[in-house]
Length: 113
Length: 115
Image (cartoon, rainbow over all chains, first blue to last red; front, side):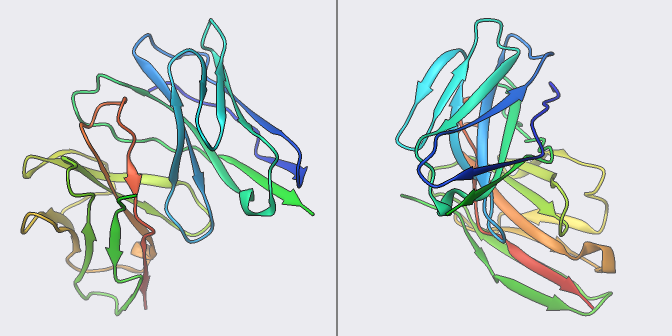
């Protein structure tokens, strides 16, 4: 499983766009990039997943450059409720059906008024 | 939106006692997982389950742990003789196909406190 590196913490203010970058230099051809969000005392919540280029949903955008060695989660116009830990995970999409997730420490985002 | 539900939300148990944590995965999902998170630490994989058998388990998932799908809707984690170090949040997750293309959906966990 490819190792990921992301900042330990970030601070932002309400209404700003937040970009969290994750490095995954050893990503394999079959690997997908997935981001989860976790609030205190809650389970991780799936945000977005991508393989290459750009993916957008109602919550976030995911930018993946051509070499796929990094990815950036973009949260538009954050609010206080976006304060959470954000995890970047890389995993084989053909993992034989046994898709265990390996979580790192994540990025602790604090949104201030 | 369908969700994974876990009960109880908080379980307090004496050391050495057995505990069963319950989960109702999303109804059409085929793959089931347990994770745990000790306070202030990372989310750790425990076990994955498919077709009524364990697919993979971590080193944490020793002989004191077992999982079961007793009927078509529930998925349980049993800890036979709890230890103080079993105190943690336990999360159940489920996914459709189990490949990386299908994200796992998590419940909000059971906080297990061992006294």
